[in-house]
Image (cartoon, rainbow over all chains, first blue to last red; front, top):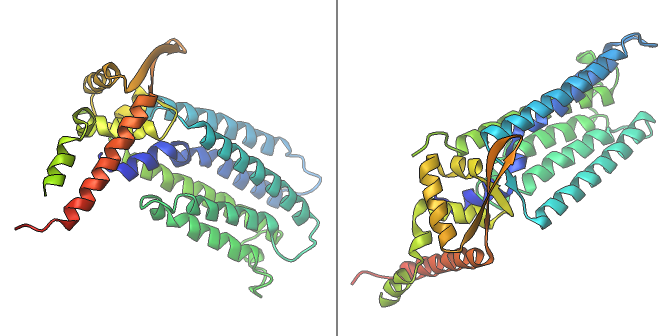
Length: 201
Length: 107
């Protein structure tokens, strides 16, 4: 490898490109939401989401260890670490606020879906400065898909979530988010694998 | 045309080697990286990477720290201030060379 831009891109965004890290949270979100959709209330199977969260945490630990042992570790610059921390705090605060508002059904759109759509768009835009990063256009496409289903009542698309067996729009949107988080993570991982050769010379 | 040759002769030969150039470019973008990451990045064998790192360390361009994590040996590599200056100056030189080469017309 001798492409300056690709080397810098890989080094600076090494953790973001370790896409399998997104699979446990994506799967957990998907499975817990499906459980919430199909369980009857009061639920006698509350242990299921707890088990799913525990398995998700164990899977994340395994993936983290595998990346460290097979791909190595990079310590980002102080300013990059700080920026990443601030983005994560902001995303978590926005997500919680959106979830709280969605559960009150105050407006006919899914705010939690729009927060995730914004997150996917951000993932694309922050890499778009580089030639390599602009290839991650699937983040933008996934974000647009989530924005579309989140805004569907305003766009007079009808209750699509009923057609797929979901109780409400919020549940339907979160299931789609979970699926797309997993899909984006797998594609990011494939990019990382292609970019880092295994053979020694 | 003479400028192009002057620029070429001024390039840092230690950094100009492709594997060392990759190592220095990557380390300049982060605080530090471990041996395994650099091996995956460059595609070199452990022996070859170790040899390149030794040359760069001897030139004062980077520091190599060896320690144990969970009873396993771990090597962490970081670029020095001098190393940052050297790689940035190398890429600036390459950029000037590229600009001069674009203006050059064979006589």
